Length: 275
Image 1 (spheres, one colour):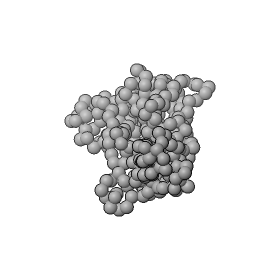
Image 2 (tube, rainbow, N blue to C red; image 1 turned 120 degrees about the vertical axis):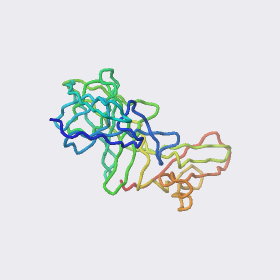
Image 3 (cartoon, rainbow, N blue to C red; image 1 turned 90 degrees about the horizontal axis):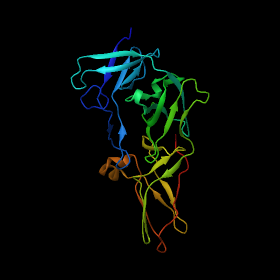
Image 4 (spheres, one colour; image 1 turned 45 degrees about the horizontal axis):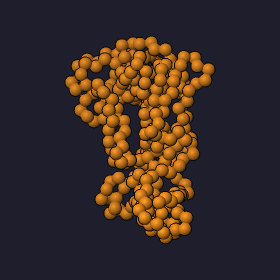
């Protein structure tokens, strides 16, 4: 017996489920950036929802193929039991303590399980998933007080891993590590501008940590050799009210160099974040 099956319209598009997994937008993303916001499904007594996907699993580890007649006006939902060959995946992270992973999405890149999207946080500690190739989509970290951060892959590098049955060397998805700042700058003669709106952290695997809700990274010191340090400063209330994204990102910084240059080294310094 499967128990109660519930589909949640968590992407708020007026449909329950979808025929195509799509990206969405929200305040606090990097410019021209999007993120994944899937609908969700729970089966039986599951405490953690999983993405609405072609394949889903229940609390006992039984997998099903999802057949939904219409996302817009659903009348019939069928879960067909399937028995995919499973392999193990490890997930780990470093560099943050206060916030924990709430959702870690991966997607199948194999034809046999095309359309499969898995939230690793919905799985037990030992994460057994259908064998095949997967790519990292995104992660969301947070805490009970509502603080949150979004993790997106390097736009120039696909994070892939292969899951095999009874593999001697278990593949691992790792994010975090030793963080570095990244942003954009414009140098025009003696005028140097450092963007606050493009500021984010980069982990060991090139993944980007951004949208620090509740604890944004403000007042980063900007150091250029031979120049007086300045700040990527916290916006004032009026500045933040003009543009909601400023609740997540610092203001830009400008420097006038002593002489014209075609390139310059910029160091960003931040003592310690509460997370």
